[in-house]
Image: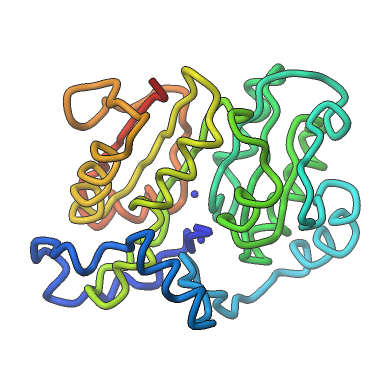
Length: 260
C-alpha cells in the first residue's frame, strides 16, 4: 500500500549492505534539504515513476473516472467539507499500490473520509474501478508527490490518520535518503495530524522497520502506542504486497504512533 513511496517494491533485488547500521550522514536532515533548495538541486523524491502495464480495464477506468474521483494537485488547501459533503474525519493513505486494502477499508468505514496519494497509474486505474464498483462516496485520489501534497494542500492539524502500507523500502544504502519514514518527513506528518491522530506504518522489510521505529521515536510530538512494534490491526486487510512478503517468508512489522 509507491511514497509517495512506490508501493510495488521492485527494489527487492536488495544489496548486501541493507542491514548495515545507519550512519547519521545517511539520514535526510532539514539542513541538507535547505542546502539542496538553495543550490537549486532537484528535491529528493520518495518514489520513482516506473513504467507499468495498464490493463484495458485500468486504462478505461483511469480515462473515464479520473475527473470524477481524482482531485487535481493545486497549491491551495483542500476544503474537506466541500469535497466530501460532510465534516467526517479524514485519513490519508500514502502510496496505496493497487488499492485493494484502501477500497475495503473505505467501504467498511463509511463515516470516515479517505484520500489516497499515488503516482502509479495502473494502481490509480484499479482503485478508480473499485470505487465505481463498490459505490464509494468517501474516497478520493490525488496523483502527485505526497510530500508536496502535504506541504501545499493539507491544513496543519486536520488529518486524523496516515496509513503507509508496504512502501518502497529503498534497501540500498545510497537510496536511504528516499525513505518516507524519516525526519524531517515524519515531522511533516506530525504537523498535519490532529491531536490524538496516528501514523500506521506496515512493512515486510525488517531493516526498514528498524529504521522507521528509530526515526518515529525521535520525531517530536509523536509517541509509540505500543512497546516497540504494534500487533496486527485486525481491521487492516491483507494486500497483494503483503501476500508476496509472506510467500517469501518475510516478517510483517507494524508501527503505530500517535500525536501527543
